[in-house]
Image 1 (cartoon, rainbow, N blue to C red):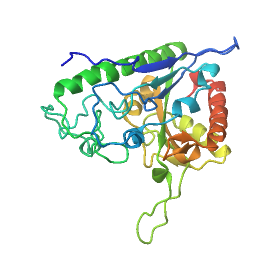
Image 2: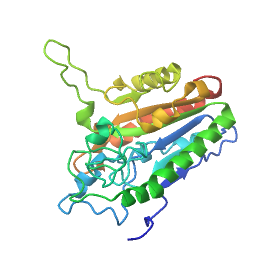
Image 3: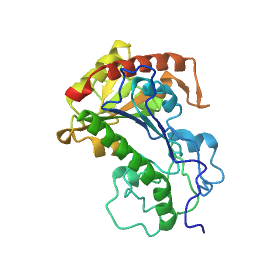
Amino acid sequence: MSSAVSLPVEPFEVRAPVTADASVRPGALVFASPHSGRLRPDDFQPAVALSEARIRSAEDVLVDQLIASAPGHGIPVLSGRISRAYVDLNRAADELDPALIEDCPASAPSPKTLAGFGVIPRRAGDGADLYDRRLSMAEAVRRLEAVHAPYHHILSELMGAAHQASGRAILIDWHSMPSRAASGRSRGPGRAPVQGVDVVLGDRHGSACDARLTRRLRALFEAAGWRVGLNQPYAGGYSTQTWGRPDEGFHAIQIELSRALYLDEATLTPTPGFARCKKVLDRVIAALAAQDWSHQA
C-alpha cells in the first residue's frame, strides 16, 4: 500500500484578491467554502452499489461559484477541492469514527461522529453508508495529512495575514443546507411551528464573533427578502469554533444557504434561481467589503 495519498490536484484553491480598483486593499475578511469540492482520490473506494448522487449529497455544490465575486472586492477565497465524502474539512482532525476506522484511538466521539459524520464520514449526506468495508488507521492518517492539514494550514495563513493587515480577522465560512433542513417544521403539540428559512447564520450562539457582524449580515439578507435563521439547526462547525475568538481579534461566522434557492437537489445542477441567488450574494459581498471592519466587529 502506498505510503501517501496521490491527489489529482492540490486539495484546495485560493483565489487571491484581484481588483482593478487601486483603492481596494485586502482587509479583515476571509471567505472559505470547505465543502464545495467534488474530486475523490483513487483510494476512496466507496460501496460498489452507491450512486454518484448519494456520494455527493453532502457537498456544497456550486457554493464556491456563488461567492466568486469576493476577490474583486479585495477578499481572498479558500475553497476545498476534495469531496466532503472523502474528508470533512469542517471537523477536527481527531473526530475519528471507531465504527469506521479500525484501531481508532480511544476517545469520546461527538454525537455527530457517532452518527457517522466525523472527519472521515461513514455516511453520505442523505444517511447512506459510504463504505462496505472498514478503513485502517493508516488510511485515515494519510487522508488527513494529504487533505485536512494543508487546508487548515493555508486558512491559518490567510487569517494571520488579515489580522496583521487590519488588527482583526473575520472568517465567513460558506455552506449550503438541504431544503428539508431549511423548511418549516413542528416543535411539538401546542407549539407554533418553526418557519422555513433561506439562510442560517451560525455564530455559536454569539460567542464566535462580535454581534454587530451577525446583525449586519442578517440585515443585508433580510433587505433582499430572504428569511434568516440564527444558529438553528446550524450554529457553526469546527472552523467557526476554531477561529471564533473575538477577545483575540479573530471572528468567525458560518452561513448556510438553502439549496432550494439555486440548485436542483436531484440532479445537482443550477436552477434559474442560481442567477438571482448570486445577485443577492454579490450585493451582500460588496456591502461587507465596503465596510471598514478594522475598526469594528
